[in-house]
Image (cartoon, rainbow, N blue to C red; front, side, top):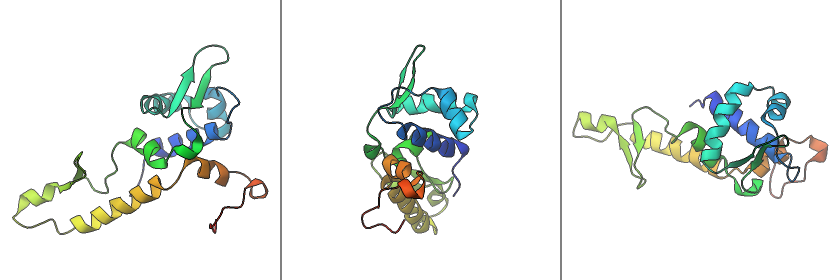
Length: 156
């Protein structure tokens, strides 16, 4: 399963904001420069992150973007879904608002889709990994090794 550059660049944007807590709004130019990302692409991504309530913006000469919540309360599933939409391992795979998994191939016959169990497990594993990873963890992990806090119960 591949995520697009939307997810990669969006997560990098969020990590850069997380590195600067309490320093006030960070300009999009500063993030683009620090992360070597295209400014025009970031403008598109930040609109999605704002709409999802993950970042706030301030206009003006000292304006820019800040995290809308503390980094330890923002999970990567929120960020990735804000940018990519619902996570589905296959084109035929759809989840209803009630959490039921549907496969468009099940309409082809009277039997269940032969691969539905596999893709349901793949989706569950990806969702658990994203939901179990906070922005604060990524910010901490991105620090040079000598500056990192020792993680409790972690081998990272």
